[in-house]
Image (cartoon, rainbow, N blue to C red; front, side, top):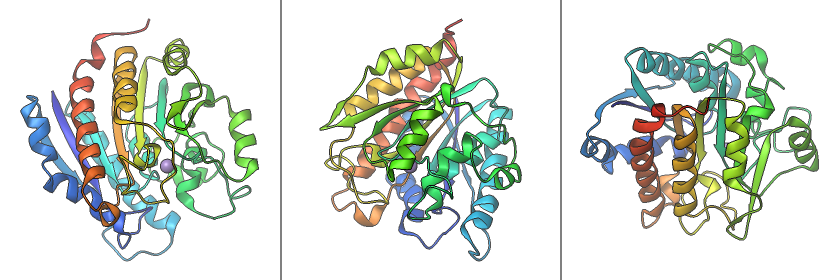
Length: 292
Ligand SMILES: [Mn+2]
């Protein structure tokens, strides 16, 4: 298979943030070789901000237009887009790069990323990443990037969620139709496979989005936000990715929020490389089976 690794060296359009170095560090740590050793032909694209940082929405739109172009190009060339990004905002660019009607989302994250300007207490744009995708806010911003058709909550599943704030975000999630499997003490609080089975009755394609903060701090200390205890293990993620690839055609995947500055002994980097390896192995076969 051909894989296009798309580096997005910015945090919501801000290239000064330490997570901007994450994609390059993964390439330097041997990401390409890992995929090539699996027999893939690998190309690399770079989606840079290319100008001064102005404000989050403006700069995120600028970067995401480049992400969308790179994803569009990869898919046109029959290559799988594997995106390395500083923040979850990059998901807007990935989805904008292809016709995602009929495409569900498997989203791994410690957080809900489901606030809107009306519910947020931090004001952080990345904390609204998924709410943009469901069409709840920033529609004009997403429309500037590419295909901005909202994704219905009932074709989205989330794994690893364990920090939702404020209470209004939880209420929004509960009303959204999104299937959320929370993680507590390192254990899923629901049936992962049954959740994917339900999703498979609704869609045949999936975009896989992995925020590394979905993992336990023991395996992923190097992330953007304060690590939240009790998240996924590497084995959990492997099971989720394999089960997802077994049920859906993977259209694209993103690994987000690696912060090399907080990754003392390199274990987050090792986790990210392992995830790329698993995705490389699974994406190859994911088109073989259809749930229909
Ligand atoms: Mn996130």
